[in-house]
Length: 343
Image: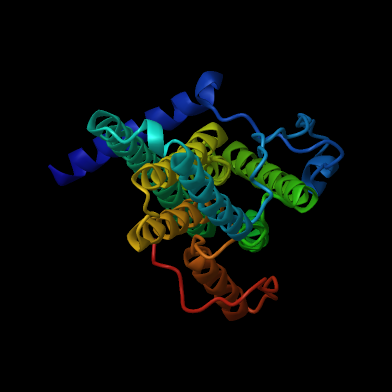
């Protein structure tokens, strides 16, 4: 019975892989690379390379290149100025707003703007934390897919096995380096993206040659799938890095905060008393929260960043594996404590 079930499973796996090879719509196209770059393996094999157009990332907006600390300091100064201006306007309007109905209307307006401000703060803070979580998961996912491809490369024949494992060590070094480069550095980011595309093309070419030499689910099919997942994980991480809170939402948040500050000052002016100290404490607290939102929403810079520990552990594991096999390892681009989690 066990032999029969095992035979059925093997037959199903073989049928699925044959369908993968026969029907082009289920196959992954070779990764396209930047203009002017041509992997050596493809150049020597005479393979055509689909040129990649210039990558056009999302617009950075007006505030993205300005440090979050500078924005926060300026925001605090403008908010305090808005409170002072509102207070003076309120003092001038005191004679026309002494009745209870006017004071009730001012207090209701102040409460409404504070409620809107709280809603915007909650929305933007939640959105920025979601983006941070997505970037963290993307790093773990990419480390897992690269590690899986590295393990499955051991199943390939000797010439391809050595070539693919060397390419994967170079690739993980490149991805670790990319984790320390801000997307505001356009030239270096574009260069790293082009290098990653070239290595992906080399890896896909090796997977295709493995499939041509041995079109079976094991080992070629497993490595083809692992290479496919590796390329997909690159796209997911790249998309997560470029995903940010829309700037129009940030502008709306800052504008609402300044208007609320002015209304707080005006409310104190019409009563003839300056806003209490707790109002200024609230302003400072909101500015600190805005700083955290901006810092979290800007990947690879600032105080709050995504940990690259999974990729660095994988890099150290690959380096140790290459040293154990008596082959020179690619130099690590940063500290690599420990080993990556086993696949």
